[in-house]
Amino acid sequence: MDSQRSLWAWGLESQEPTREQLQQAASRLAAKYKVNLVPAAPPGSDVIELRPPRARVPRALAAFTSTGTRTRAFHSYGHSFRDRVRKFHGSYPNPVDAVAAPRNEDELSAVLDWCSSKGYAALPFGGGSSVVGGVEPPQSVPGAVSVDMSSMGQVLEGDTVSRAARIQAGTFGPAIERHLKPHGLTLRHFPQSFEFSTLGGWIATRSAGHYATNQTHIEDFVKSVRMVTPSGVWASRRLPGSGAGPDPNRYVAGSEGILGVITEAWVRVQASPRRRASAGVEFPSFAQAAAAARAIVQTKLWPANCRVLDEGEAQVAAGMDGSRALLVLGFESADVPQDGPMQVALDIARENGGMQNAGDKGAARGQDAVALWRRSFLEMPFVWNTLLGLGLINDTFETAVTWDRWSQFHEQVRAATFDALRRVCGGGMVTCRFTHLYPDGPAPYYTFTGLGKQGSEMEMWAEVKAAASEAVISSGGTITHHHAVGRDHRPWYDRERPDLFAGALRAAKKALDPIGVMNPGVLIEP
Image (cartoon, rainbow, N blue to C red):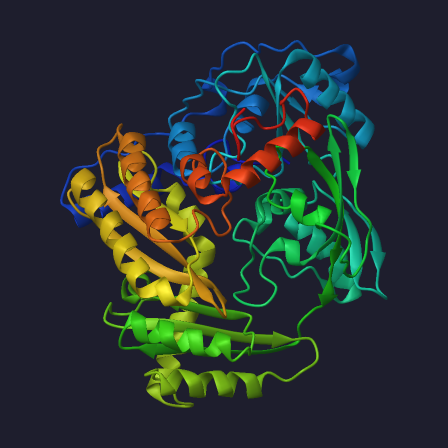
């Protein structure tokens, strides 16, 4: 699949912005910030230069292992802000040395044996959508091998009675849904990276989908996992539930490739929804919208969508005027009508200051805003493609915190991020939305934007990112809700996790990966 993917932009080569689109984006940004901007041109794949590979591929692995320049470049980065900037400028100071695409577990075991014998880092690679440095090679290793799982990308087996499917780890989101749809089923896991991410990547990073409540994280769907480690195969039993000791599936979920390479999983599937209801509700303030969302989720109505956009986010993403917040509500079911739950949610929203009445202008306005937000959400990664090379510092970070801490947490995190933008960029914008909701707290998702200096984007971004991350941890939140830890979040994850747990994780890694070749530097020190 990577032959069709862009080397620098989100999406396919055919979806890369044209030179004219890049110029238009530069003109809009120049007018907004009242500066002169000259867009840079991204490099062509034919001019990418990499150091020679340090690894010599054994003959036994040559049939499925490549040291080609384009293949190595594509597998050296994910899609974090730093990755996007470096790819756009054709900067690859530390590329992977080889890319192995094993077609079965025996070939995968041979790759891990090779890496262990040479001390090469083995870096599991699904779709390359990591935004936290999760697939980037570490610096101090004699070689780095990207283990691309796309050749193990099939739906192997289905159980329509128990509603489960056995799926290989390298299967991309659309392929999963195409296989399930004729049976009237769905996995119902749709992260924003859905088109370009895989089941194994979702499990390894504890991915979360679009759905805001109830089953949101991929581990909610996982019944059993197979994982090839340098010490052998890890396999759990498929059961609806068990109280037999710590859950081995939960140990794999979120392991980010440091224990082994996930090869397949049994996952819960469900009937495709046929009954839906949606609405948008405006609020005079973000605080009132948040209070309404808390009341709805604590009533346990379990809306499929229950997103809250602050005033700035509603203006940028939903076309509102910047004076009101927006609550996006959606209910769905395969069998049960959803008008009743929607009406209860709307009543709760109105009791908390929301403005939405059937048939009035507020209802129409809210629905229009929801439609604009949905389109903006889907298009955003492609819009960001046009902003590269212009010096713009724009990124997101997400977290979760309990409701009792929420107000103070938000005030502290937003202030720290904005202060950093003012210090680094002379000003900027910080917006917030809730992407997921729990009865005991929200998962706020922040976006920060400021105009930096062309050529200095990474250093400026790093200062803002560090200030925001410090505020998140100091104020009692988690460093990541669903983007994973990777290399970017390690300093703050080290402070969040219990020390004794870190010791237990090191012991597990030692048992499964004695030489320490599996994604070194992620979650724990090499």
